[in-house]
Image 1 (spheres, helix red, strand yellow):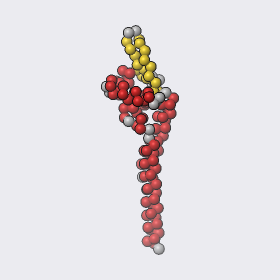
Image 2 (cartoon, one colour):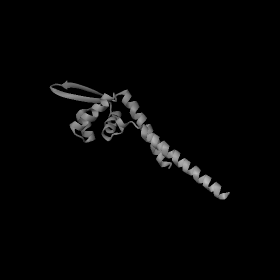
Image 3 (cartoon, one colour):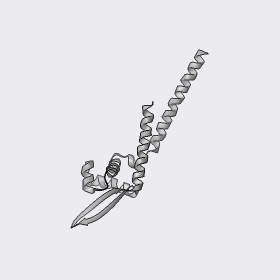
Image 4 (cartoon, one colour):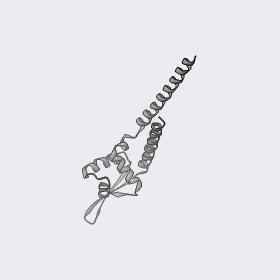
Length: 124
């Protein structure tokens, strides 16, 4: 009888581990892959902390190239996570980015999912 209870306890422990692993996997699968990429997460995070940033300020902040920033910003703009405004200041072209309300919601959701994933890993 003692061995049966011991096995039953072991099975419950394994089930609990399996459930936690499934939750971690589910939380990871739900992550917004568009934001999860390092450079795009940097762009969205920087814009969340600032009302707006110029292309050059964002490029310096993220220590990236013009091409890399352009490609990632375009993907975020296509998803309507950021807004890009282009204008001339005198004869100089200026590009300014800001986070849209959809982008702010997406970042909040992403952060909630990451917190869930971290808590799940720590309780393991």
